[in-house]
Image (cartoon, rainbow, N blue to C red):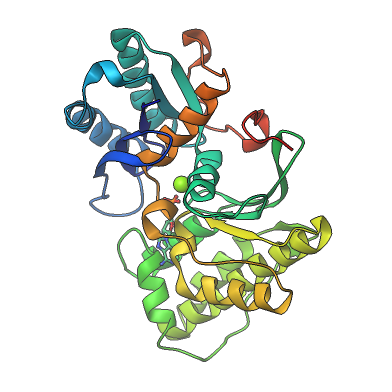
Length: 324
Ligand code: AMP
Ligand code: MG
């Protein structure tokens, strides 16, 4: 089976073709904000201007008649961006006369890494721009067993970088500056059971920029936010009895976060290894592959159900492709 997948929830417009075994082709046209953070209307305009070229390039890499389905990111994400991608996917499905399948972006992050590693039945720490969740599979669903109560850790990092005068995305810059410091200034650490709150942390970190050097703020921010994430992730491993950890989402690229998770996993005998950057970041292959799994298990999305779903939660999806 060959599936065309289109990702476009926020910043990366990406189309990919996959079969059961491998990524056959991938092409991306990322949106980079001129200034400030991601502006939904500007991102959608970028997607609208580039989607024809991106899809045409992907299609030209294969014999069109070999495509068995069209998958697209249905949510969660920015409404204006999701609508561009959904419209293109609907048109392609009608034109190619193949089924359409709307994919949950968070589940796609998990499935592409399960495909590329041997981490079956892991605890998942999913940390991206807008999302921070801890998930565990049970009885045909990825259950959200912990999550942020306010903003995602990635958005928090991007806000900190912007306040310090750096461009979007802030993650790599904050990581670089943090590496220059070992001076911890206390910042709010807010864990409530299995849930997390980052809004007080970002307010305090932005305030600290007025009196503390930026390297120390970045270091202290990372140590605080990542300790919070590691604490709930360890509790998830402990409470479920699972022994593998899968890290997903763009913030997962951070080497300090990976180190802290490695130490925690080593200490409790759990298995973890840092994933490849190409699958941590948003990519078309993850949508295409998850679409392939869904189509193989008889799931497709009728046109009238294919609208954008900006608040699509992973636990809404019945996971039919795992047999236990
Ligand atoms: P995603 O939404 O999964 O594409 O992830 C995007 C988020 O990941 C943005 O908030 C980035 O700032 C963040 N990010 C990217 N690289 C890093 C890094 N090295 N450290 C921390 N955050 C990062
Ligand atoms: Mg993502």
